[in-house]
Length: 76
Image (cartoon, rainbow, N blue to C red; front, side, top):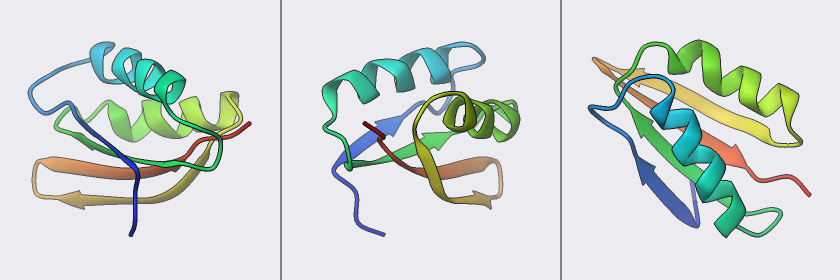
């Protein structure tokens, strides 16, 4: 999947991945896609809630061993 921004939070734990995602969203334009790479299992709960609470769309998520990958479209 194409993306405009990459955010690698491997090795970081809650709440840091979501706090960093907030910062990356501020840098992005509406419609941009952010690829988030995380190793914290809490992101499987936190990222969907982040997208549901704010106007962002979780396009895809996958788990590759101990790594979680998310593609998030920034809302307006």
